[in-house]
Image 1 (tube, rainbow, N blue to C red):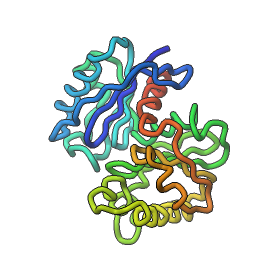
Image 2 (cartoon, one colour):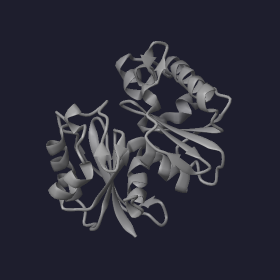
Image 3 (spheres, rainbow, N blue to C red):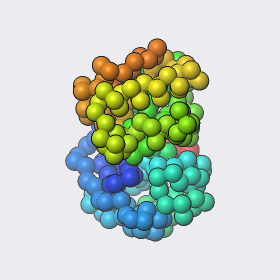
Image 4 (cartoon, rainbow, N blue to C red):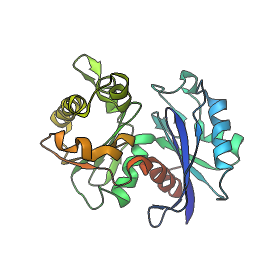
Length: 246
């Protein structure tokens, strides 16, 4: 079965058709810029424009940078605050004309990695972290998701973790990989002290360059790059739409 997965990011919204039985992107990706401001109606219209580029019918899954509970947006760290309290699934169904399943973007990436990627077959505690505009987190216990953990907002050294070591911070402050990896190691150490994961799976666009910094990372847990890299959110969103919770 082919389902369209959508991943909403800080700078762009990406989508691709996903073979949910194989966990593979079935055709090329497409993207549109994330609207400014990233308010509900402009965002919904951008998703409509993106979805129209594909011939795939049926439901869509949307990985979204927010806490999502029963389709409702509950936080807005990296999107317009007017999203809070909006039922995103009903909005997309009205504007796009498709059944939609929304979930936290890091949770979506984690679902993809646990089902078909670097976390497949792993037991114990697995934590996926995405480094991009912020730091997303997804926590799994024996393959079961603990949703909406949002550990990127945990305070470390007097700052939110994502204000210390996100991919955006590395770019904005001009950090080389050595300096940035030192900050990431501080984040990993804090998370490990709280949750004792067996493995960290690192995702987000920056992991396309994992060979440049992976050897600089240190933790008592195993550290591995995400299999799906920047496409994990798309794949996981499609998988979630194939087995919606509602």
